[in-house]
Length: 265
Image (cartoon, rainbow, N blue to C red):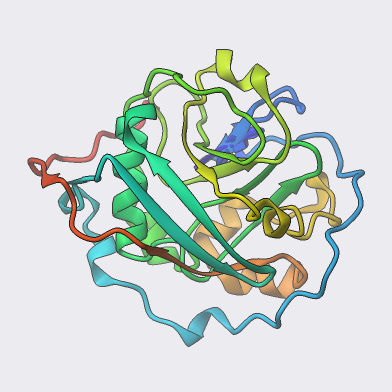
């Protein structure tokens, strides 16, 4: 995704960098491209003990994820997603009207378990917690170039709100971040929240391990090419999303299949 670093895609490339733009954190959340580095982590580490992570090879992925162009269901107007992590569980409530394109993309990713076994690879205290690079390199490769257009910003990036990371205009793919504090400055940068962590859930999100420091965290490009084994080997304390599951049934409707749009070079 793009990092906010949001190069990291605020980034990657929040998310590959958070994301790609980290507010500097001057760049916002990283998106898919490798995220740019935000200010070093200085906050206290989350309390509690993480559950031992299972090797990334312990699970297989939904083969449908290798064909992103076919995953075009329209999301319900409202739906919920249950996250089970190494710190505990929390539920995310999504409102499609807030950011329709983002809500639809997230719905399809969760429906096919894209986020299962993925690492929360970037946590910047008093800023964001970012994830969205698949644990499986083949899946990550399949989603390159599947950018969706930007949504209008209708909600502020308040604490607990979830937003896609980006590396620039119209570059959202799979990386997302959860705001750990009110980040209103991200609003004018075009980051459009599409959901919010329900009451009590932020107690879990705020415990995600954040003490490696933004400059010393895993390289997003290597996560993409090597998968979760790379993260577990070098940064074993980072938390994992064991599963992200829809609590809402059938989609509102299916839209026409489209060819993924390639990112500008």
